[in-house]
Each structure stands twice: as C-alpha cells, then as structure tokens.
Amino acid sequence: MSTLVMKFGGTSVGSAEAIGQVAEIVLDQARQWERLVVVVSAMSGVTDALIRGARTAAAGDDRTYRAIVTDLRAKHYGAVSTLFADDARADLLATVDAYLDEFAAFCHSVHVLGEVTPRAMDAISSLGERISARIVAALLRQRGARSEAVDATELIVTDDRFQNAAPLMEATRQQVAARLVPLLAQGVIPIVTGFIGATEKGITTTLGRGGSDYSAAILGDCLDADEVWTWTDVDGVMSADPRLVPDARVIPTLSYSEVGELAYFGAKVLHPRTIRPVVERGIPLWVKNTFNPTFPGTRIVSEAESTPGTVKAVTAIKGLSLVTVEGRGMMGVPGIAARTFAAVAAQGASVLMISQASSEQSISFVIPTDAVPPVTAAIEEEMALELARRDVDRVWAMDDVVIVTAVGAGMRSTPGVAYRVLGALAHGAEQAINVIAIVQGSSECSISLVVAAADAAAAVQAIHKEVIVNHV
Ligand code: ADP
Ligand code: ASP
Ligand code: MG
Image (cartoon, rainbow, N blue to C red; front, side, top):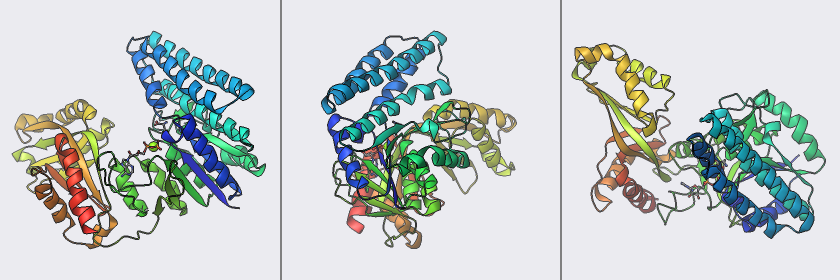
C-alpha cells in the first residue's frame, strides 16, 4: 500500500496564504497515494514566543507572557479569519482561545513558583503545534477532504528526557497501529502535531527544537512509508545557508552521512536525528519548497552518489567556545584526555569537536559557550592535583568562536581537499582568515575549522566561492 508522510515547517504554516498553499499540496498528493499522513509545525515564531513567555514568567515578569498571549491570539485569529467562514471560524477561534488560556495559566503558575521545569516547558512549548494542526485539518475539511487533527502525544511514546526526548520505537509502533492506521484505512488524512510526544504515563514531552522533522521520520518508520517529504521555505538543502551566501545553490542529492554532518554542524534545514529512522529502513527522504512545489528539491539517498573531489556544502555553527587544557607536564600523566572528557560529560555538555596537538601538551575542544563555566570548574576539580603540581598549567576558554564545516563524501577519495579549504581562507577573502583549529570528521566526509565569530560569514563565503562554485 503506497504511503507518504509529509511534514510542513513553521514558515509553511506561517500565514493564511501559506496554509492555503499547504492545503493545495496535501489535496494534490492525496490523489496519488493510498495513505497520506501530514505532520505540521507551529506557525513560525510561535514556539519561540511560548518559550519566551515561560522564561520571563519564571524570572518574575508577569507582563511579557500576557503581551505574548495578545500577539499569538492576533496571529492565529488573522489566519483563521482569512481562511474560514462562519461556523468553522467560530469553532477554531474558540480552540485558539482555549490553548492560549492554557498557556496563560501555565505561565501564571510558573510565575508564582519562580521557576520553569523542563517538564512544564514541554507542556507550554507543545501548544503551538496543537493549534496549527487543528487549523490545517479544518481547512482540508472545508476543501472537501476527510481530515482530522491528531496530537502526537497519542502516537509518539518517548522517554522522560523533557525538551530532548527520544522515542521508544516499539511502544510508538503499537500506538501508531492502534490510533493512526485505522484512520488511514478509513481514508482520513491525519494532521499530526510535529515536535511533541508523551511518556508512557502520558506526560507531554518534546523532541528538541526543530523536532518536527524527527516526528515525520518516526511516523515514516512506524508506517513503513514509501517516502518522507519535508516541506520548508527553500528549494532544498543548499550549498550554504542562503541567508549568508546569496548565490547558494540547491544540492540535488545528498547521502545520509553528508546530510548528517550538515545538520550536526548547523544547517538547520533538517533536524540531525531525522536521518536515522529513515536510513535504517532505506526510505527515500525529500526536502521540498512549499512556495515552489513543482521544483523537485533535494533527495537524501542512502548510497552517496558523490562526485569525487566535490565539497557539496559549507555550514557554520555559532555560540561556541574553545576550551583548552594545557601544561608541559601533561605528557606524562596517564589518561588525561579520558579524565578531561569524563568531567565534561558529567556536566551534560555536548562536545562538537576535539583536537589534540601532537606534542600532547594541550587538549582543545569546542562546546556551547553557556556550558563553559560548569565545564571548566569540573575539569579544574578533576585536575586539582595536576594543577597543584604544575603538570597542568591552566584550563581556559576562548569565547566567540564558530565551527565552519565543509561537507562532501567525495573528499574521502580525493587528496588535497583540506589544502583547498585552507587556501580559500588564506586567499579567498579580503583579508586572510586566521584558523584556530582544524579537524577532519570521523566519517571523512567533512572538514571542520574553528575561526573567530567575526570571521564566520567571510569564511563561509570564501569556501563557498573557492571550493564549491569554482571547483565542481
Ligand atoms: P522549517 O520551519 O520549514 O523546518 P527551518 O527554519 O527549520 O524551516 O529550516 C529552513 C531554513 O534553514 C532555511 O530557511 C534556511 O534559511 C536555513 N538553512 C541553513 N542552512 C541551510 C542549507 N545549507 N540549506 C538550506 N537551508 C538552510
Ligand atoms: N515548532 C518547533 C520549533 O520551533 C518544532 C519545529 O518547528 O520543527 O522548534
Ligand atoms: Mg525546522
């Protein structure tokens, strides 16, 4: 039985016009597939606003969240009023009000308590998708289709790592079979809330920011879908962030490992964890543009159809610091790297990149800047003895750095890619860009460089121009 799962991102449901376009696309595909499942994000900006409301309330401010309620009401009312007439409109406006009342009540409690737990944050940040799914389902009904909003809390069973929950696939498969498959059998198009799930006890969780892609991939896996399509506001995965590099171009095919590196290093067009469930099943994944639906987009394939020597894309990730543990006596201390990273891991910080100088007199690694104070404190505690003996001289952080990554499976078989990337930084920008550290990704389809944040845009543009555009 042919099955398609389509996910529409925040901008794709970001206005009445966009939602109208989504309905067209869904109706069109409904004619071509026996089973069609739609996953939607919240309207663009809504999740950010909900989170900001909760944070400000926790910090003692009870005005901001009220202002956010007003803004969000206007945003959703605007879309509903444009798209619907009479009865359906009244019902939907009442639905919007009910969810925003819930938001205000949560923020009120958070304000009283003076803190927002990860669990409360998930309850709050899940509301945007609950509203958008209902609007999209109602519009499809208005246009003659059978459609129903489904909260993913009824489908996607997760662990209880609030704000970054992982699906429990067996339980999820059972829920999907019990709740979604019968709807599909009746010819209903389910509109599922992206981003959210629930624990086995039914407590709402979220899959991490940008997690709607992941929701679509999970459902694609559980339904054994033939294809998964994620619809966004650009023509596909591009050779660089189009906001940074205006002449970035669409990449027609990317392998799973390439897109994994890209997503991991900041190209947020696809949520990094999305790839896994679809790779494991070999389900084709497409990234398409809601606002240019006839354009094929990017196909993510399991086997790299990589052109030798080609770097396909360059990306940057910001908000990072380079932490260095250094000392001339370090060479003689056994297990120093293991102890360092154990101390980092104990703080729950994710290490994006590691480089150790061959002299073994220092270890450097990149972590998000907000993790620096706990991480340096933990390392200093772990190394207290070595610091006292001067085997380790200091633990220090350089803030305001970015990781710029060039991605392409072709570099595996091509010598000299690192040389070209470095050459682009030396000669490709107006002023030579200083490289603080360089690392080749373990999958050998990426090279990452640490540069100062101020050089990020110039570095991305230089690599794009010298290594991608001039060398294909
Ligand atoms: P959605 O809400 O549809 O999930 P996102 O904002 O999460 O959309 O992701 C799409 C955005 O990702 C694009 O608008 C683009 O600005 C940004 N982006 C960053 N890097 C890339 C890239 N290499 N290719 C395509 N888009 C990129
Ligand atoms: N609405 C959620 C977010 O903004 C999930 C998503 O858009 O994928 O993070
Ligand atoms: Mg996204």
